[in-house]
Length: 218
Image (cartoon, rainbow, N blue to C red):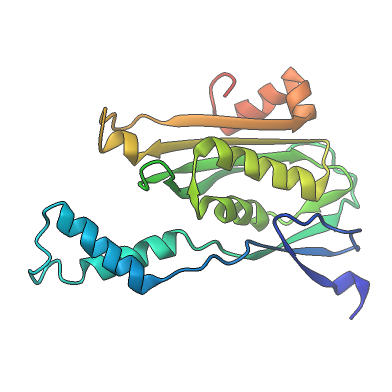
């Protein structure tokens, strides 16, 4: 196998080595131990403790469905983070808007959903466009906070691409806020993180935010 087609497998904690012309980094999270049988039993105990009638036909399978639903939402997808040489010397902003975000608030284990806008100013490497959505999905499939998710996506792109700048804006509605407590349906939380030129230069940051459609600085 040639260096150009070499594929490596690294965990989140490991840093990439010298990049070949076509560079693939296998991004994966060390697998967590899951016990669906125990999760189903715990779900049944929780629902019963809340006074729900599990003996009826409608809810007989609810603990199993509940355990499998959470296991699916918390399963972190692996992917190849492929980069290419910036042979054209492109140095303007690359922005992917409206990437779906689906995650679980770690405080209440209720979903938050929305969109991410992810962009960068290329240096020597460019990223395959589909990988922006893959990076967002990778960090969203776990118990999260929106602030951490935003920062993790930004840091991964900075680490992998070493670009001149990176910017990430996440807009999301949290059901822990819209379905309970204050019940502020429709309220959206906006978080942002910037590295490099997009952090240091206010005009570049303003251009990024204008293209995302976010009013003012996030």
